[in-house]
Length: 210
Image (cartoon, rainbow, N blue to C red):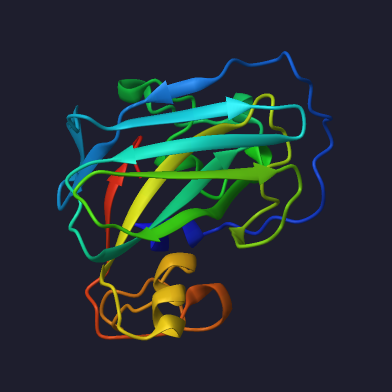
């Protein structure tokens, strides 16, 4: 799924608009299963994602269910800092932006790591925070530049059974392709793309169409 996000996504520079604390409200919603036909129309029972807005950051919690105990997972943020410039709304799930806006430079689109863990149960809560203009672990774009108005979709990626060795386990929970075989990797194995492995990795859940 994330391979499609890469196309046409060449962004540079800082955002021209300053964040304001009162422009938008906090957000919460469910996760949906990603199937071979796309994102399911039915919310995953027991799932919940919450996004909280602060003056200089956003914080979030992702409660995912139906996970495989012992597997490694990562959570990725797909963010549009200026959703008012989106042209392909995901109306079925209440978003201003959709697949046609992946790489939308006018909306200051960005993809970044949000959280990662090796889960011990079928339900797990991932939490994190992204500060304004924090460029650490950003795959595309300027990161979070407009916390007050940014629209964010969350993507849960399965990296397969956690490896025995700590360096690979770290890669499985902090990079896009850590532990993934060449058949299921979405990017070349360098930097944030992670250490290659023999796991079958896949995007399994998301808050909206991807």
